[in-house]
Length: 255
Ligand SMILES: N[C@@H](CCC(=O)N[C@@H](CS)C(=O)NCC(=O)O)C(=O)O
Image (cartoon, rainbow, N blue to C red):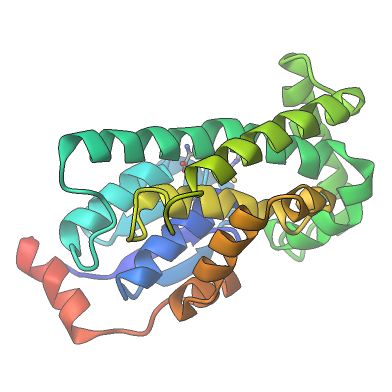
C-alpha cells in the first residue's frame, strides 16, 4: 500500500488549520488538495457531509472530521504526543476540543458571515473555494447567503451580533482563567486542546472581532507562544511539512 497522505483543505477553515497544525507538529508530509467547488462531488464521495478537512491515506481510507484525523495521526505518529496519557486529563482535553469545535466555531462563523464589516475580508479569505471558471463575487454571495440561512434557521441574524460578541467575551474570560496558572491548557505541554482552541481564535483574528482578544492579555500571550512555533507558522500559511524519512516509515510500519 502507498503511504501518501492527501489533505482536502481550505485555508480559512479552523478545522483544516487544526489538522494542518497536528500534521506539522509531527512533521508528517502530505499533499494539499484545495477543496474548491469543482471538487464538490469528489469531496462528497470521501465525506458524505462534504466538509473539510478530509485526510486520505491513499489506498487505505479517507478520514473526515478534524478530531478523527488528529487521533489517527496521533496513533500513527506518536511523537510529540498531543494527547495526555491519563484518562482524566484525556477526557478534559476532549471536552476543551469539543468546546472549541462547537461553541467557538459557531460564534466565529457568525462573525465571519453575518457581520457586514467582515464581508470583504471573508470573500478574500475564502476565494480559493471558487474555481476560476465561476464568477467570484456572485458565487461568494451565494455561499454567504447559504450560510446566513443556516444561522437564521437557528434563530440568529446580524441583529444578534452584539449578543454573540458578548458570549465570545465570556468564553475568552473563561479561557483566560484556565491559562492563569499554566502556560498551556493542560499544563506545561501543548495538547490537542490548545491546538483546537488556537485554530478557532487564529481564524477569528482575521476578522473585526479580533478586538475581543485585545482585552485578554493572558490569551494573547498564549496565542503568541503558539504562533512563535515554526511548524505552527507553516501550518497557518498552508505549507505542508517536507518529507522526513522517519515519519513516512512510521506509517508504513503500521500497515
Ligand atoms: N466537525 C468537523 C467540522 C468540519 C466543518 O464544519 N468544516 C467546514 C469548513 S470550516 C465545512 O467544510 N463546511 C462546509 C459545509 O458545511 O457545507 C471537523 O472537525 O472537521
